[in-house]
Amino acid sequence: MISDLLPTSIAMNSTQRRQDIIQIAQNCGQVLVNDLVEKYNVSAVTIRADLNQLSRKGLLVRSRGGAMANNEVSQELSIDQKHNERIEIKQKLAQAVCNQLKEGETIILDSGSTTAEVAKSLGQFNRLVVMTNGLNVAQNLATLNQYSSHQNNIEVLMTGGTLRHKSLSFYGHQAEEAVNRYHFDKVILGVDGFDFNAGLTTHFEYEAILNRKMCDVAKQIVVVTDSSKFNRCGIHKIRAINEIDILVTDNGIPDSFVQTLERKGVKLVIVDR
Image 1 (cartoon, one colour):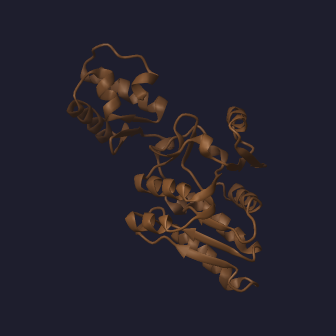
Image 2 (spheres, rainbow, N blue to C red):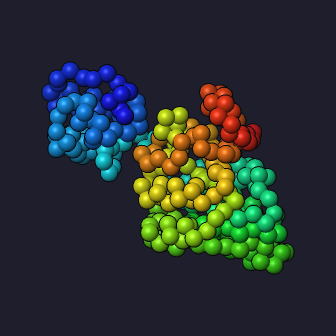
Image 3 (tube, rainbow, N blue to C red):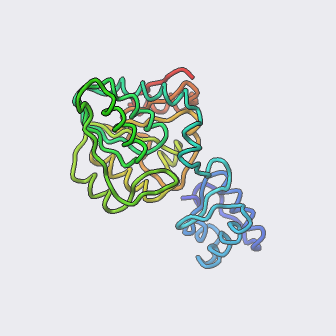
């Protein structure tokens, strides 16, 4: 809880309290209404009014049950914006992920720009079953099958659901039910944030819910992310870092993460930037 992270504040006026809330959000990445109610000993109505006021001023980003810091960490780019970011690293990461896969495996491939690059790299396999909730990921897989020298080398399954246009990803009850009907060897996840305390996080609540279900139905959790995501937090948690089986990243990963993850038994696959 946030109230455990910082000392309890003395009585303060609304201006002081709101300044304090901004500082907590900057330090922790997010604030939650219930934690702030306990910390400041005021009503939930008062805290929501504080967060709404700060949101209107552009100082916080309002979210369900709380708010996030309004900075680069909490901003979500569109899939088109993400596609061109660090593209060479993403291509290296994609190949490194493929090196962790085996012929004939069943895989669930999360939506995202990095996982879209993974999809492009799967043409080296003769037999795979791949489910995805990413429209662009599925398109990349379909293109592989269309131009591959192998006939139907990748069986593609779609979750269906409601399409989120910003990320070209499907979510919702239909997608969750589709995932629950299968069991996979590996889930390959991209993330928006990778933090010691918050774990693996994303910006969109329903994507986090679906990602958690993906993890539930897979034998192994493979996370692929470039090093810019370390020490960042989205507001919605997917998994704790000690629940990862394999992390594929680049050599910009902070040493503190390397040491902690190795101690927790996570297999690290690190590519050169």
